[in-house]
Length: 225
Length: 225
DNA sequence: ATATTGAAAATTGTCGACAATTTACGGTCT
DNA sequence: AGACCGTAAATTGTCGACAATTTTCAATAT
Image (cartoon, rainbow over all chains, first blue to last red):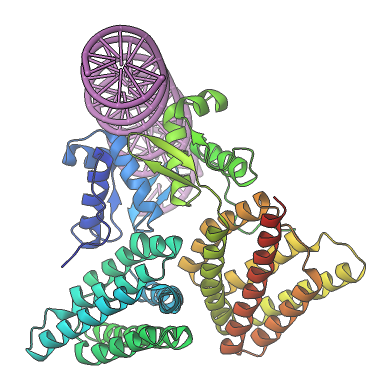
């Protein structure tokens, strides 16, 4: 599985930022908890300045919220917040699919079709590790295919980490494999037919389905407690 | 004219950030120019640390780009970049209009209609200062009406400053008043009819028109040199 | 007992200095 | 003259200390 944006840590703040982002997304640092600069600087064995810079970057990703002279807290996860993110995803990735249908090269489209057929084998053979990585790969390729640098950055550097945080911590690692696979197939077909309108509509619908799927899970989780 | 998000500077970094953002957006700090931390710290009479933090925040807004161990530069303005931003605006503000049709309160809609009719008087009486402030006011109200906090933050704190930078520096302060006013009217009607689909379509079209208008101006600017 | 005040403790904001890296420049070699 | 290399200058990255603000908590008054 390839990594798309090899964001390699060069500076010490980079390392702290990546590490903290990972720990926040995976819930190792609890949602809503306070981020003490001193505490973190002793924990990571770096100065407060690099922790501060890392926290600033996390704030830019909307992973933490900061109040002047008070400090930073990890964002709190609410079902409403996740629904809001999916509304944004629908808008942005819909546009990405539209642009991908216009701007992806023929070879990129062929690669995308290749990815899908290889995933089809996996799904058929019950290799259920499709969902997380495979789905991500598919969406990333279309986002990159939009060739819109700002859009790519917004989605890859910003929104996706937030969505992953929600999905991990609210236990939304669900299957929804087979139907999603068909949806992917139709989206790719629209792109290879160079049909931007349809590509956008299908992508938006795909994300709406995913959103609805999550909404029902959230509702049933609620009722269990 | 009301200010919507009273982002008031409490800390010294805030002040530096707001000031630098203003100077970059208005072109007082040239696009593409290097941002020397030392130079700026002497210019603003603050320590390098606060300049650094301000630059980090500017990077998060996509107003400057930074390379490790090298420094930060103001982003360079290309016509393609502006077109990319308008594609994102189309997607996000289209969604905002859709959500506004669902979530704005009746009084908020009435206020919006009031704004429009007051602007109609101004336009009729040839007060041509409508464009910048009036257009902004209209769009902000709809964005806020979406009630989607993440979406609001993305647009208000992020995208709009970038768009304004482009418009100011590429000399896109054009009129396009009268037709845009009609478009606004139709969008408000769709919202007051609680028709999300139509509100989104009309908003997207409105932004597409604006984009096309700018694209032709850019092309004619190009040919003048 | 509750509310209020005020000092102490803890936390964040700001600063100047040092370390690490990049850039500029002069000298040498072909 | 032009390319290559190494040292010096400049710039960014990191650190610890101090200043300003917030929070804590005990003492006092109602």
